[in-house]
Length: 348
Ligand code: ATP
Ligand code: MG
Ligand code: FE
Image (cartoon, rainbow, N blue to C red):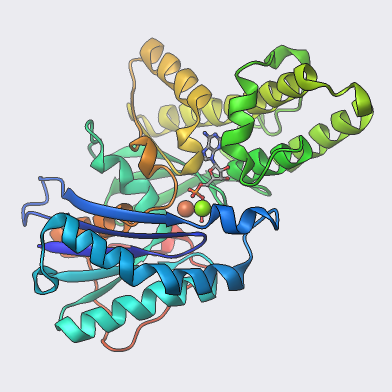
């Protein structure tokens, strides 16, 4: 079965085609994908402007879909199922992908499946060279979410802990902004941190020892702001790099400690990292290090699949279809769910 996936929840338009064997033991294979990031467009505003995002998705999605089919050498009629991101995300942006997917599914007389964006992130490591096996603990670290989940199968997700305020990616982005770095600041802050000394500043590690699997990053942002104001003109290139390194270290340390605690609490030996912050080198370094010492396996998505993309949406729909859990929506009706907790997706 060839599954077309469309992602449009925020500021990336992604389209991809995967091929799924009927046997769920075999991982679907990515045939082609195309992505357009709106980062340049939103940069001038310091963040995503929802209305501009929707309009740009409209411009991009069909050319990207055409490109994907051409690259895969698959005719439109070869598509067996059409999937789109149903939520969570920006309502207007989601509606573009949903509308185009529903139109395609109707024209081709194929099932239409709405996918949970975070399920896409969470399953994206299955497209890597070293795919995980169920069950595992997932550390979901993206721009809008920071969650630890116990994952027993596709659709069997139990929330173990989550952030009570900012997400990890948001902490990276907001701290980066305070350091004068352009949006989205995560990757820029990570780059600046390479030349800094993480021990030069003592930043808080909220909830590190509270025994829960929850996170809190709002206080860290405040601490960074305080340091920036305190230093004023003394915040030269070297000190900026130090502060970036200290910020990254504070975020990464909390993520690593809590993820390891979650794996231990579940009695499992496998951790899956997903979402944009999963691209962070320091996070991977520290997790790999801890995993070696404790005899754990850690799986990551390919770097290009950490942030939003169509491949993860096509994959999630394909893996659901393989297990008979891809509940099709009635065509031509469809909906989007801008707020939608992952633990509620169920087994379909
Ligand atoms: P969500 O998936 O929760 O709806 P999102 O789709 O905006 O949010 P992603 O696309 O998964 O989030 O990830 C984007 C986030 O990842 C941004 O906050 C970005 O700064 C962060 N990020 C990307 N690369 C890195 C990196 N190398 N280091 C740290 N953060 C990074
Ligand atoms: Mg994005
Ligand atoms: Fe995302």
